[in-house]
Length: 227
Ligand SMILES: *Cc1c(COP(=O)(O)O)cnc(C)c1O
Image 1 (cartoon, rainbow, N blue to C red):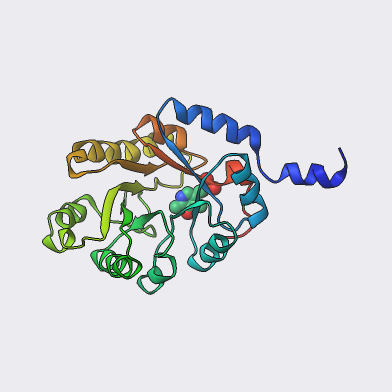
Image 2 (image 1 turned 120 degrees about the vertical axis):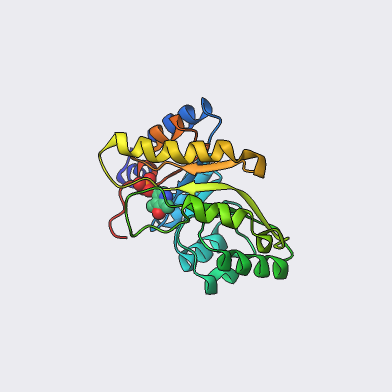
């Protein structure tokens, strides 16, 4: 193998990808390949290898990548600012990080304009960190019973998303995922289908606790140098 092709094959971790896909089968769970800050060549390579769903955190970067690879199914997994919804409303497949009614109202408005129904997940704050976005369980209860939500006809709440604390303490991570898993199961009658939880370092715990959609970046694309 010459240097060029060796470099090409180093870009994505096929062994990890195959392993993760195999693990997910046992849980009937889907993989969102988190490609933020990674070049389009790497994404294209994983797409050609069979991965169809990619997750991005930054609107500008996402729109550029969608222009280059519109056949992929793009998920927005970051914190979405109200004024940027219109940049992704025409093509986005799923928005994971909904954390206010105001944002949902804007998503609905842009969905109407785009003549689409936009699928969303409500982000629940489950970690012990103050910096992470999301609803508390009380807040989400109030939202789900709010008539202003049911008036948003072009928005479809498909489920919930959560991020555990960034810690080595697996007991704490499990406790956080367990609480969201329980809440998800209790509220399935509201039409919830998707529970998005788990990243490279905690996805196995998340699957055990009921996740059916994991968002994995570095295990597939390697470490991100900056963020
Ligand atoms: C970056 C990111 C991920 C992926 O993280 P890895 O540790 O690289 O797997 C998952 N979810 C969200 C919301 C992210 O911002």
